[in-house]
Structures are given as C-alpha cells and as structure tokens.
Amino acid sequence: MKLNVTEIRKDFPILERETRSGVRLTYLDSTATSQKPLSVIQAMDDFYRRSNANIHRGVHTLAEESTALYESARDRIAKFINAGSARQIIYTRNTTESINLVAYSWARANLKQGDLVILTEMEHHSNLVPWHMLQAERGIELDFITVTEDGVLDLEVYKSLLSRRPKLVSFTHMSNVLGTVNPAAEMIKLAHEVDAIVLVDGAQSVPHLKVDVQALDADFYAFSAHKMCGPTGIGALYGKIELLEAMPPFLGGGDMIKEVKLRSFRANTLPHKFEAGTPAIAEAIGFGAAVDYLTKIGMENISAHEHEITEYALERLEEIPGLKLFGPSADKKGGVAAFTLDGIHPHDVAQILDQDGIAIRAGHHCAQPLHEKFGIPATSRASFYMYNTKEEVDLLVNGIYKVKETFK
Amino acid sequence: MDDLYREVIIEHYKNPGYRGKLDPHDISFADNNPLCGDHIQIDLRVGTDGVVTDARFDGHGCAISQASADLLIESIIGKPLEEIKKLNKESILELLGIELGPVRLKCALLSLKVLKAGVYGLGEASDELVE
Ligand SMILES: Cc1ncc(COP(=O)(O)O)c(C=O)c1O
Image (tube, rainbow over all chains, first blue to last red; front, top):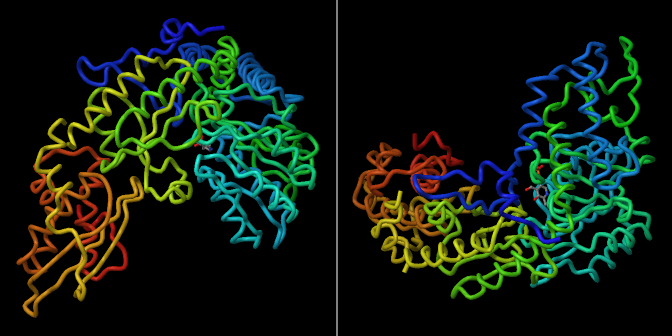
C-alpha cells in the first residue's frame, strides 16, 4: 500500500516547526534518531499523568497499572520482531547497552584467550569497542569481514574466516553510513554451520525493514527505540531462550533477584534477570506505542516508501558535479545517502544546509574505521524515513548547489 | 549566521598563505578534533630572542578550522612566544570576525590549542589552553 505521507506528517508535530523565522524544518537525520509521533508522546504523557508508580512488587492500583503497561509493551515489542516469547525481550538503554550485555554476560562466560570473534569493517563503534575491551581483558582474537569498493560485505572473505572456527559472529544488519542491508539470514546460516553464535546489530534494520528474528535464526538481536519512533533511553536485546537462561546476570541489584541473603543471591527468571534497578518505565511504554504506530503503518509500506525516496535521492545527488556517493545502489540499501563534495568539508556542507532548515549529519557517524577504509575523515549523510518526501530531496539538492556556490 | 562563510574565510580556506611544514623547526605539535576529524599540525621556528621567525600549519578539516589556522599563523610570525601564550578564544574570534556556536567553536580553536600546547611544550592539547 502506498503511504499517505501528507497524513503521516501530521502525526509528527515537530515537522511543523521552523528552525528560524520562515524556514521550515527538513529533517533528514533519522538514522541518528527518528522523530516521534504524537501517539508515542501521548502514551508517555498519559503514563505520567495517570498511572505513574514503580513497577513490580506493588499492590496498589497504580503499581499494578504501571506494571501491566510496562509488560504489555514488552509483549508488543516481542510480536513486532516475531520473538517466540516476551521473556526473550530484555529492556536495555539502547543498542549499545544490548551489545555490551552480550559482551559482559555471554562472552565473559563463554570466550577465552585465543577464541575468535568475527566483526565487519562497517560496524558502528558500539559493535567494535565492547570487543576491543574484551580483547584487552581476555585476549580474544578479532577479525573482520572486509567491505568491497561498492560498500557490501565480501562473503568470500567471510567464508574463509568461518573456516577458522569463530565462537561469535557479530555484524550490523544495516549500515548506518553506507545503508547496505547485509544478507543476515544467509550469514547466520553459514555461522551456524560452524557452531558460532550470532549477534546482530539491528539498530538500523528494525526501524526500516520487517524483521523476523526467528526466520533469521539470530541468536541475539539488538535495537534501540529512539531510531524507530520511540523515546531515547530504552532499547532491547532479543536472545534465544537457552542462551539467555544459561547466561550469568549483567548488572546486580533490585528486580533482577529472586531472593537475597546477606552473603548471596538467587537470580530472577527471564527477562527480569537482566533488568536491575528501576527501569525506564515511561520510555518502555513509549517504545510499545512506537511499535504499535509502525505496525499500523506497516513495515513493508515503510520500506517501499523509503526505497522510492532513496532511489530518487541517489539519482538526483549523482547529477551534482563533484559529489561522490558511498554505498551500494538503491536496491541493496536502506534510506541512507552518505556523500562527499570535492574540496568542501562535510561540516561546512551541513552548516550551510542548516541555514535553509535542512538537517543532515556530518562526521564519521561513529564508524571511523569504515571512513578510514575509504580514505576520508568524514562524510555528509542524509537519511530518510516514512515522513520524508521527494520535495525534501529537491530541497536538499538545491541546498547542495548553494553550498557549492558559497565555495565557488 | 550567513556571515559564517564570509569571503575572507573561504579565501583563507581555499588559498592559504601558510600551509606547509617547516624542516628544521624548533617547535612542532599536532592534534585532532575528534568531532569532525579535523587535523592540524603547526611547526615554528623561534629565534634566540624568543620571537617566532617563521611558522606553517598543515592538516585537513572544515573551512572554519583551516581558515582560522591560516589567519592564526599569519598573525604570530614576528611575535614573541610570551605574547602567543596570552592568545585566547577572543583572539581567534577577532581574527575570524564572526560569531560561532559551541560546536563550530571547537573547529575554530583547534589551531590555537595546538599552537599553545606546542609553545608550552605540553604532551596534550587541552581545552583549558584556549579558555
Ligand atoms: C548500526 C548502528 N549500531 C548501533 C548504534 C548505536 O545505537 P545507540 O546509540 O542507540 O545505542 C547505531 C546508532 O547510531 C547504529 O546506527
């Protein structure tokens, strides 16, 4: 079904605003964080106005209500990615914390010196640094699936790395710079053939593609609410039951315990075992409202719309002399266009576009090694979501011509 | 705001007068702005009287960072090190002749940070140097 973008835009109050007098916002930075629909803002507002209380253990009305809202959101998030059960959805702060949870709990219990972990050259720092830290602590080995010139993973390199019997393969489902959608199902299948566990960074895929963790057969899957119409401060880790059951707890404290003695504790059951302390309750409820919103619009429809916008954007951007695009063609990627302009630093590009209310991002986008690979310190990045239009792409293109004029 | 890309800045960015390296030199220091990956190296030659006789900068980055480096180098040749130690944020903004938000200020101040860390013989260029 074709999206009615005019109607969708009405759901996002921020898209109405001006960045300075008379200049309407053109938001092309959803890869960094998406805007939030009214239904999400209202769900959180309602919670604080009506139901606010700490969750679990309370017997009063508000405590029961807030617990029910918190857990019902978990149920809907589980359904959204087709997890087998809500017990497999652990609330975290974001993708970064989800990956760190796996690195601290699963990896420290399962990896020893010399064990190989396979990552890729296109990872976000959040899927690199936790493994660097474990390498320093444990002496694990890291190796990397290379990225080809046109911005896709080299699967031949992957296969030869797999012959070295890695214990863990961890990769991003969709690159936040190149936009590349990696063949996750195939990569997971290959990893399982050599008995490796697979962690998928879904920060960019869950917001934009229909993700089915069971069909993918992912062992762990990490994502953030704030990139998928939800609030900041909440994310999730999906894990297979048998892995999560066997893992030691992550943080210790309230809620993650079944019983505490002065000198010992027994850990709680899933998912609470990994959720120590008072969580981000309103944010979890907002997260639930976000997946409701995405479900209502339909993930297939969102992907199709973004594809149309991206195809158009790449076509228009390619026409601009001196502009170089990074990443594969539109059929292999999501709604991301990273580029450089000859002789003009990305920061200057972003700054001049901002004068026309156009919000794009400039820098290394937390993927410094990938930029180094392409021999550039930084790129400008425009990214698209369900609320973006072709008219906004035109504004971007006109803005870039203005940048070139300034530096003429 | 539109002033940010005044002609002087574009001019110093595109045609810097003091880009390059000095070999030999008496002082050399380099640092990055991790935010945008700007990189600046500054080489100085200093006379026995403590006066800068020649200076160059090298590196890459946005127009603001590179133009401010070029303007800064231009302004310090012939100056005693003691005077350079007194330069601060205001000195750079005066050279650039623009107002800057907090993010771009970091770009503008990178060259001064590098210069002062070099002049003081410090291991690291810290933000306090340009307050
Ligand atoms: C591919 C990818 N992984 C991980 C992250 C980290 O997400 P968060 O900052 O929400 O933890 C991001 C966010 O930019 C991302 O794009």
